[in-house]
Length: 589
Ligand code: BES
Ligand code: ZN
Image 1 (cartoon, protein in one colour):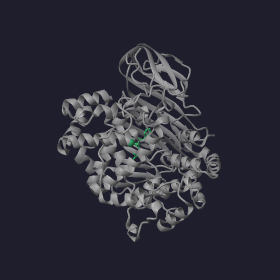
Image 2 (cartoon, protein in one colour):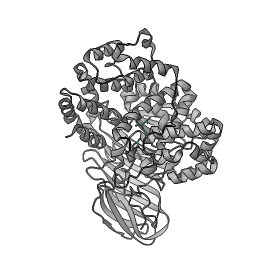
Image 3 (cartoon, helix red, strand yellow):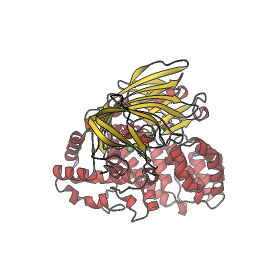
Image 4 (tube, protein in one colour):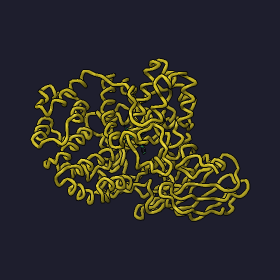
């Protein structure tokens, strides 16, 4: 046998799935999806077929000719889940697997009504990236293969179901139930399968975009993301036509563990983006950029994840530059380069987890998630761009997308393509050191901007008594955040008070600024922010915020750790299983 992906049981020598027909009944009370999936193969197949599964309870399997199929489930691997082995009779074109999801399905986020904005209806959402689709459906859960799909989803009225697919209408499905239809004509890797069920309203934002959100949030969300068509046009100018027909958005409840997830045709977004000033739309731009880098050209395995995220961060900045100018995009880049440094320091200078190409066999990708593939990846792409100049690099990117669209590629395939198209540039930028060496190579490009120099000088003088003057009232949220990032920590309580009074930080709705501030305050043991901290930690599930906040409390000298454990104990039942898992390690319970 030959495994094609260290995070899947899939076997190169076996049948390949090309299409899924899903049919689920959503049982909210039992927190279970029950139904079936029909897997159609690329060609008639015979013999063993290994599928991925995690906690699924299989009821029976039959071929397209309605013959029974023998199957067995292996012992569970902590990272991969269970291998579900089918023995296909000669010439099997498709199989139908009847099954239900297990009690701890890692892809499923079940929320009680109280965790939603409306407070009246439950909510369900999936998060399949990186390797959770297997807890939702038995499949070849590797980005090496792509599938089209259809789905029938039976949910309690008045809830609406939405998916990473084209909606095909709804019909009554017995008393108090509605059946929603979907079809996904573009082939996707299984990590892009997505479903959400909730009390959802919708509003058009442009000719090919609409926003779905809980009714109480729809106005604010429609305002915040009103620029979406301009974003798509800018992206198309840079990277070619948008290939997914629709770019709809779904505003998630606060428990959603990420900022955004690029589910095709339906990007999922955290409600912490609703800052009221459109200053956090870069996350939408990022997920949009994945429509080219990630969803069209897909990483072959999680070892090549930097191809998805590094190129997407680069593309995100290019789109932002088109929309808001060079300085805006540059300052965003510096913000995130600063954040990367924190992760690099946590890993240490020689850590293999700071390489672009990783070897994650035996490792749960969720546990090593960091900004390395994102920001180190983007820095590498910037270097390539600078080495050949924008016009040539833009042509290269177009060619890259064109050559590999609807395919998956490894880092080696990328290197070969780069050498072919732009000979010599890999060596010129010391590319192998970037890809296979740890840390940040010395030749990284350093962004300079007058605004940045002023902010850095001001923060550097803080301990000697320098303070921002009245001009700081006009700082953008990004400038304020850059200044806060550079401040020493812990800070004396008097300094914390000064900052909070000068910038009204504790009351901010922009979560990037708010969390940067709360991290400083928590690390400094500054108690007046405790009620606000408790509120944020109790409601927001975005790991990007939870991890540094709990980390800062645990590092504080006072009763921070005790406070962290108390808040965690109260909030944990509401967190997504993913967030709960990684926070447990930080809080140490
Ligand atoms: N695809 C990622 C989210 C993801 C990665 C989920 C790996 C699970 C495993 C998404 O595109 C992303 O990167 N989101 C970022 C947004 C950002 C970098 C602007 C986030 O959630 O913070
Ligand atoms: Zn991304």
